[in-house]
Length: 70
Image (cartoon, rainbow, N blue to C red; front, side):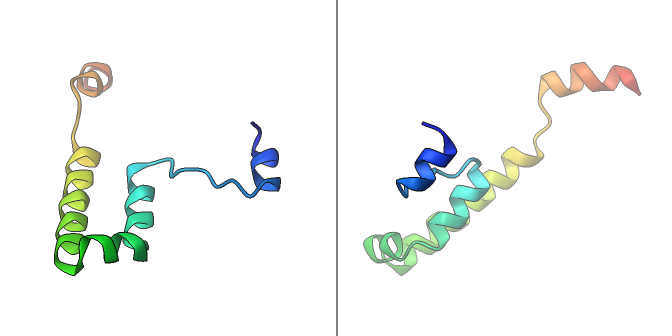
């Protein structure tokens, strides 16, 4: 289904990145109510940390591909 068709039918897309998903999660009153304040905040902090570790990790492929260019 095209973007235009989804828009007409008011079908929203899922977040495209983990960072976008974290923003959606953080803004979700339903999740906050379902999990409770403490669990919600802890899970959000853990997932932010996880994203930061993933985002800054240099993979073997990147090393193999780019170190030779220096």
